[in-house]
Each structure stands twice: as structure tokens, then as C-alpha cells.
Length: 161
Image 1 (tube, rainbow, N blue to C red):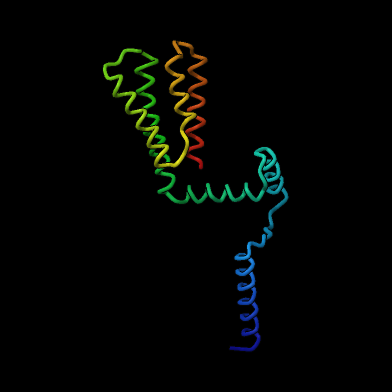
Image 2: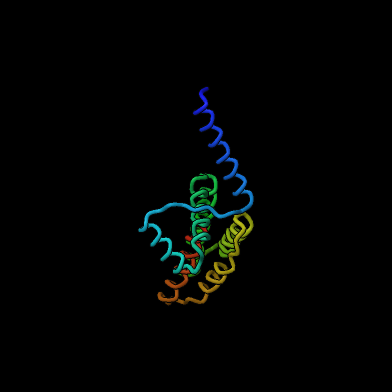
């Protein structure tokens, strides 16, 4: 190997070792992005009231989840199961208010809520409250729409960690 190639290789190894040491010490790194992307990051971080660093960390976390089919499929599966149980519950208690297996329908929806909380490690209290509110709708379409919106927002946030 020539001396020039050997020196270049040695310098590259030293750069890598320095970079690795700095990363282990927690020193921040600089990334180069175009101005338009920087503006988008700046605006979004202000809108969400987070630092750009936290915004990028969150974006990477979400992308990793979507890259991992298992993570996304697991979340999607529980959202799907909940939607099916909610539809059955709504059919039984709001749309027709006559259903032979009322206890079974309530049990299934409760079970879905517990699965979401235990297996996805989230607090589903907001979802539980929306379901309870459904019992007092009494034909009020506006109230029903509000409840559906709460449930939809919760489930979207569940899909996108």
C-alpha cells in the first residue's frame, strides 16, 4: 500500500474514532439542510411548541415505527379491532337501542380498551370517556359527531406514535 493511501486511511480512521467519541460524550452534531426544509422545521416546531431537536427525534421515531412492519401492524390491528367493536356498540346503543346481547357488546368494547392500554402502553381514559358520552347522546347528531371526532383523533394518534 502506498504511503499516500496509508495516510488517507489513517486520517479517515481518526475522524471516525473522533466522531464516535463525540457521539458517546453527547456532543451535538450539525446537519446540512436546504433553507426551505429548515423553514418547515422552524414553523412546525413553533406550532407544536417543541425544539427542532425534539421534532427531529420524534420524526425519526415515527419513521422507525413505520419501517418496522411489526410495530405499525400491531398498532393498526388494535385500532381495527377497536373500530369493529365501536361500530357494534354504536349500532346496539345509539342507532337502534335494541340489541339482544347488550352485555356482550359492552364487554367486547371494554376488552378492546383494556388491550389498547395494556399492549400499546397508552392511557385510553379519553377514549373511555367518549364511549360513556355515547350513552347520553339520545339522537343528537351534533353530539354524536363530536364523540366520533374524539375517537377518530385518539385512534390517529395511536397509529402515529
